Amino acid sequence: MNRHLTSKQISQYLVGDLTPEQEVHAHECSQCGARLARLESSLSHFRSSVRNLKETRPMTRMYSGNETMAGFTSVLIHAGVVTMILLLGTLKPVQSMISKSVTLIAPNLKPYEATHKGGGGGGGRSPIEASKGKLPKSAVRVFTPSRVDPTDSKLPMVPTIIGDVPNITAQNYGDPLGKIGTPSNGTGFGGGIGPGMGSGIGSGRGLGSGGSFGGSVYSIGGGVSSPSIIHKVEPEYSEEARKAKWQGTVQLSVIVDESGHPRDIKVAQSLGLGLDQKAIEAVEKWLFKPGMKDGKPVAVFATIQVTFHLL
Amino acid sequence: MERALSSEVMSDFDGLVNEYRPRIFRFILASLRNRESAENLTQECFVKAYKAREQFRGAASVPTWLLQIAANLVRDHENSGRLKFWRRALKVDLTDVMDVIPDRQLSPESMLSVKQEVEGIWRAAAKLPERQRTVLLLRFVEDLNLLEIAEVTGLKLGTVKTHLFRAIESVRRALEEKG
Image (cartoon, rainbow over all chains, first blue to last red; front, side, top):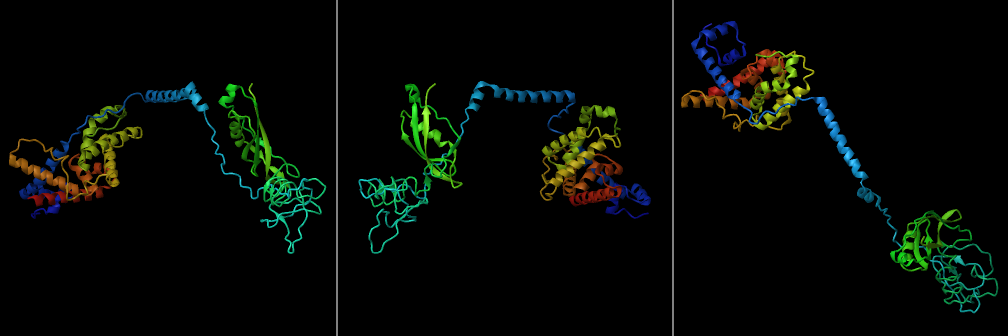
């Protein structure tokens, strides 16, 4: 073979893929030999340049110690750290901080909105108290106040009151809690029946009937069961009362709503020295089983007595 | 040259690291041309080797085994796209590797010529696909034979030959263009 190696065959020679004839030619032909030598020399320089590459940073020694020992030490250190954390929990300052936990209860500050206020007073300024009788029909508005003695109007209008009406059988209109006797509109004024003021019936003031009738807040009795306490929070003593060794009872009037929460807490009988406020704060957190009427929970008026006494 | 694996060799892992670390490092650096990545991957290579030392039964020589791990790491590294030095075909950065031209007793002209040659090969290698570059480095820098290269890269002998031929062709063309 006399033909010189092609460029491709020069590359093939370096791979070792030449035929035996080509191999012989590569060794015998000075021209092809020179081309090969030049390429090999370049690659040799490249090899030297790569082999001269050195790491700049010092070699990191691989860990060659006792692995079991290392593992054991690691476990010990971890156990130590966990023990330290647990010991921290036993320290008095830490424990006192933990015990100072405060239960936060967001009181419902919204005033209780009864659909109808009870207690419409009445009266015709009569010297005799309101007489017993039935209540007029319930309506959303009162156009004409109830009277025991219907007026002689040409176009009479049926008297109404606002709120629920207990079923009482009587001839005349009157106060269901009134006394049987001479028909009377009561001692109050305003056109209704009763000792109060307004167009309703009862001892209050307003459009409905008395405390027992007309509002969606009921008084206990007459088919309305009293609420019972489910959860009670003991009131705290105020600082002044403690110093003064003040004792006694605060009487609070509240409305226990359908869900058993006390609302519209008012002091009925004050004790002073900050104890009223403490009693209110405590009662606000109380929870009741609500009063029941006809098997349904209803809001009822209740009186709570909170007694403060020092040991 | 290659040292057969034995339990004595593996028991002295520290000695093994000292012996082969420069070689592994230069292979990875030549592959990636980024000193920091090369140092990290070299470390990773020996950590992997240390973890896998129990499974190694000595079917291959220790350097072949280590180069195998290194080649895999280089491939993973390139595939992850963390560094794209080799893909920047036009702008090749040789700052990490080009200050290491062997200092021989050459005339300044010859020195310049050698430097240009080497730089040409570096640039040509930079443009090669990862497989071809690895095969080129294993053959002409690490002096592995084709069978060993096949073992390191996990490729068939024929494929190794094809990659090597293409790599040499690229280098040869680059050198011819330089003059």
